[in-house]
Amino acid sequence: MNYLNSSEFAKQLDAADPLGKFRQQFYIPRHNGKEVVYLTGNSLGLQPRATQDAILNELEDWANFGVEGHFHARNPWMPYHEQFAKPVSILVGAKTSEVVVMNQLTVNLHLLMVSFYRPTPSRFKIICEAKAFPSDQYALESQVCFHGLNPDQTIIEVGPREGEHTIRQEDLLSAIDKHRSELALVLIGGVNYYTGQVFDMQAITKAGQAAGALVGFDLAHAAGNINLHLHDWNVDFACWCSYKYLNSGPGSVAGAYIHERHHTDPAIPRFAGWWGHDKTSRFNMEKGFIPIPTAESWQISNAPILSMAAHKASLSVFMEAGFDALVAKSKKLTGYLEFILDDIQNRLLTQSGIKDKRLEIITPRDPAQRGCQISLLAHGYGKALYHKLLENGVITDWREPNVIRCAPVPLYNSFEDIQRFGQILEDAMK
Ligand SMILES: *Cc1c(COP(=O)(O)O)cnc(C)c1O
Image (tube, rainbow, N blue to C red; front, side, top):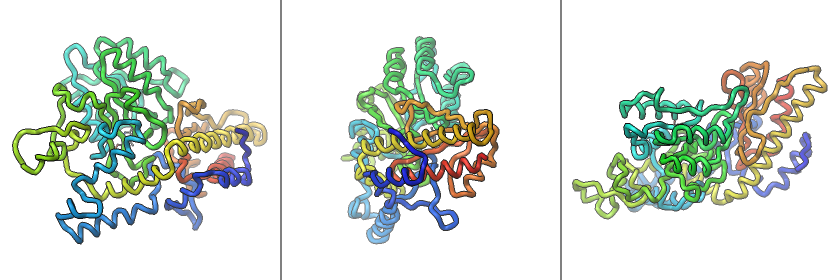
């Protein structure tokens, strides 16, 4: 596609965008009376307009029914989580029996590691990506310590090569091969939060399993962003949060996937609670845990209905838009952002007398290796650049020392947003 860096061109793309109307379904934050350019949907997705009513419905039903709402609410609370199996299975590419919405992300990561990280004296190592999201690093370390092992001898981090920003697939695969006899688990962020790099989850799963390990993914930055086929890729387990691309509100309820082959395997232990117990006998309140024969058996506590109401409102927007259409727009919008950034870099070099490279895109250039995120290194600039953007109504994400992460989200960002961002950034850099 041939892009132009002009506001008219961006407006034309918006006018031709079949998903353009979905922006109206969201609240866009304002700055000095004008809608901001919001590029942090990878951190906290915007609020769908339908969310308030969805939560109010549950508050009303609670007021009207009290405990009877478990059965008589408009959306009865007892089976409330069951309505997520369908839409969530579509988003992550799983069978409906393989997904469950519960808890928060890091909590789910721990619960899944209870089941799927079971080190033995000969097989105990974990391969993960270097500079994983800190919460994942802490979860891994504490799980390793919990088993009485030393993290330094147990966790193998694979990072970018010297002078590079992203991790080469071949390096991940060769680490798996190198440690194959001692490898218990491969656990990677499906999309790296910092660079936006998408990993080849199918190939990693195949290699990890061929080495005799289990393979799981943290999909915090992947769910609602890229196409996933967890079941077909044969992934053992995965988890994600719902407040980033899934727009379900701060700290909202998270999700988990467990491949069906593990559901009734008696060799797989899990931490149990009453919500994972066989539904027909749950209220007999008797001794002896009988797991539901699906991913639901990993549930422990009863469902947080208020945050689930927000999740419900958000997922219906996804289903209405259609995920394939969203991914198609995502590629166009992210491609436009890449074009605008390259255009700025060129102009800085040719017109402003700036001789060195100022904007370096560290996200892969290959659209197959990224979702809707571009991370840039702003060489020679400090956090003042981020504040300048903020003062001009652009919300991005700053990571020390000088990385700006931008997520053009296909549900609510427009091509005009991207063009406006480019202009403000260029002015701020001069
Ligand atoms: C956002 C994010 C988290 C946050 O964890 P919570 O338990 O939701 O607070 C963890 N891991 C990754 C990879 C993330 O991107």
